[in-house]
Image 1 (cartoon, rainbow, N blue to C red):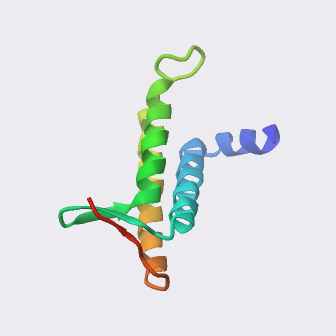
Image 2 (cartoon, rainbow, N blue to C red):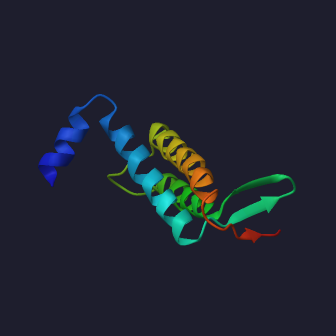
Image 3 (cartoon, rainbow, N blue to C red):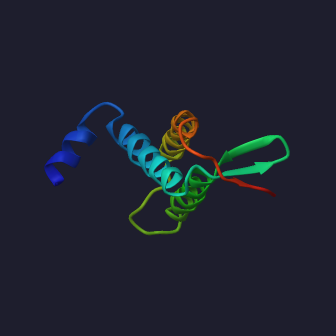
Length: 105
């Protein structure tokens, strides 16, 4: 596995692309598992799975500030957020074919 990760890291923006794909996939799979539940606040709504992933991953990224040997990277946070945003768009397309469960707030 180190060979593959080394190869990905050798690509320009390979680390950021990895964050984008992995976090986006995680958000999409969680949205699917939660049957595309939407958390609505007023007229705004977002997929619950993406919000959960974004919350956990943002906390994890900020926690690296205090973990020796780890570094906080704003670029990773942006790539994670973009991955979740794209997963949201994909989930909205999938939602058209699947029943939606709304979570009222």
